[in-house]
Image (cartoon, rainbow, N blue to C red):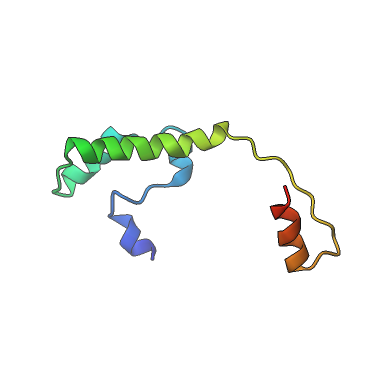
Length: 82
């Protein structure tokens, strides 16, 4: 799996995206070096996707406690009640 991702500009380290090390322009350069030029719509889509990923940090994910003795069905039901 890693070998098919290694030379593919579409696959980026998600941590690098969160750290701001990946931009649509960086990806455009990677695609160009691989022999593929990106149109404006594709570049905008890349930018939108990167922005959507980085906005995850702005969301609130409250901690949820599941009873220790809950089986899988009870645990899922407990989470869905919130």
